[in-house]
Image (cartoon, rainbow, N blue to C red):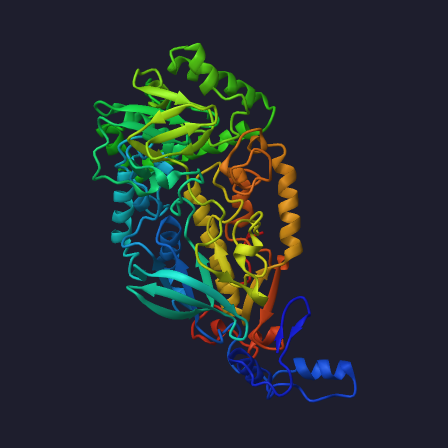
Length: 604
């Protein structure tokens, strides 16, 4: 009989064979299934919760938990490091874990995205594992290739691949209530493997699952068609007429690279412009007067960074600047107004103050509505004779090129789809939770989560960068660290307190999301632009970014739990069974200080 914090019971019918977990509970409860009938409901209740003594020290786990992590990108490796190092001694006794990675190597986003010009628009100094700061970055914003090299180096150094099963793709995940476990079906080299885990962690990320844009005739094109997330490096793009569809981060980075190619003619297809701005000269943090928005680090810089204290000091300065920048996202703020004026002037200068280009490429919507990017070389490319802008909407694609809704036709050799990723947050495999609830169905209109970390009806399922994560501000890598700490706290609590399953309550998530909507109304992310923050809509809820600053998210999540927000179900009829025989293991060990709580002299 399953009992949870809400007082509701999930039992079995008389005559039913007990499930695995039910049998475990019956043994814990000292019953053989259904408690005997009683003349008084109160007596029946008392009898049911009167379980036998659990004759072990308090907090002794009743089983070793098993955890599966899906994905070996930054999120998965962050969690692996916690489990293998920071909490290894403790959690090694409580938990076994495996990492399923569909690709043949680590890196996630940075293994998948290798298009020309790929860079991270987060400063390199803070785009690295907290446990492995890196003094060798080449630039303030690093190339994707260098990030992947760093990533592989860190994984190898810390042996974080010991628990990874490569080329293992999770095909199906189903919650089995009777076992309080997830049943996973994993595909590997044409065969299916079944795994049962107590805890499932999605570390899949959101910048690797791509799809072709929904444009009529996209597959009728007879020339070369390529997606930014599946770049074909074997093809020669020079001396070609190239269309770049999209002006998100990938399109902004690809376009100037295509424009550099010998004999190329490039057309940028975009529905609306985006803000391209460098908010400050990064070299100032190093005491240099260099206006370059992406300065190279000198050998002197790198030598200085090899001193861990100097590296930390610089990282703190960069992170502080990023965190201060959250004020930019407040609608109508003086800072937003000031930066809008600055950005407009900066963009105009990069466009040689060309009136027509400025009219088409400088946004009218709020600065910060879409992701702001430094976009090195992007605006300048439009001043070249071989680059053209097409902001009329695409009607369809035919064998030889692209047709616009205004009747124009552009003959092409290559179409580059820089059209982003599947940002629905729904896994690309069936994920069925409690009572048969499908996550795809639950999130088909708008994904909603508990602080981007968990979802109602999905017990023991944790997310890195779920809906409303800190993807619009701050450092994503640090937020992954905080998220991992939150998950660790739940794993500890579940192991020590005889907990079978946890899931956030629906009303808690409803209230969290609705209040977040109120905060979002004050922020530029709800402005008048089409953005992936709003599922590529102009109007609609912000489903991607957290409603608040990175500092607020840290205060909410970093190692802190709110158990009152969760439906908790236990492994026995009495939630206090974890008290064991009344002793703690600590006091049964020789030479332990049994008066540790007596304060020191002068201690308050």
